[in-house]
Length: 131
Image (cartoon, rainbow, N blue to C red; front, side, top):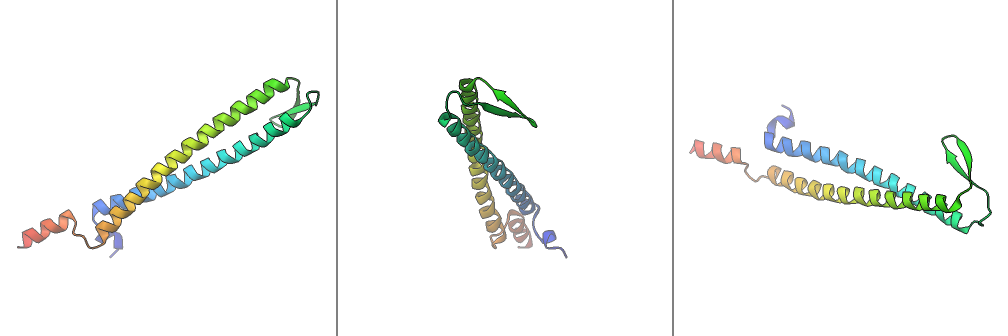
């Protein structure tokens, strides 16, 4: 007999939710990490642009082309805005990931409680019928 056949539908549902949340946590963690890397890259770009001389020739990557950018101030403002947007997104992913981790821990406790010998509702009803 399959082990899952011995587990109540309620616990099977909890396990399915637990597995789904595990996958979602991994997805959010990956997305958050990607955002954080992009934020760091933008920070370095802004730092280098701020260090450069006002008359320095600056190129911007557009697809597979490098295009000369003549408006340094506008480019700097745009990069800072992109960084801020990425920061907000990264923090949003972090909050969502934290919330999922809390739900994950709660489900884990529920599953352990259900499997740890505590009688489930169905078991109690069956015990009453047997008396």
